[in-house]
Length: 121
Image (cartoon, rainbow, N blue to C red; front, side):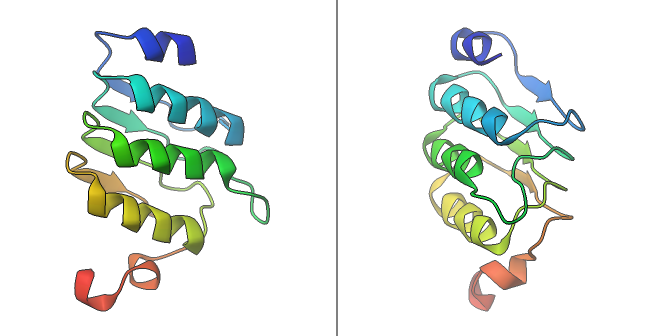
């Protein structure tokens, strides 16, 4: 999958909802998003991108890649057991990413109010 996304010149929408994806998949997608110039919509809802109580490395790499990505318009990471630390990282990423206009994060272990100052919500 990663190699295909690295060289992809036509795929614009990738729906991977409910596929039991893992921390390793988040790492692979991070690499792909750092290079890919055509993907605009990515749906990762209801996967296992992190395990509660374990390191968030793959998701952190994904967020770092999104900070530099200039083509993704829509991202869905809902229902992935993401914690408040990851939520704060997403808030920081959204401050620098100027292209992402649709971000779904519901049904995780944080609320926007918990990770962002009131004045910025």
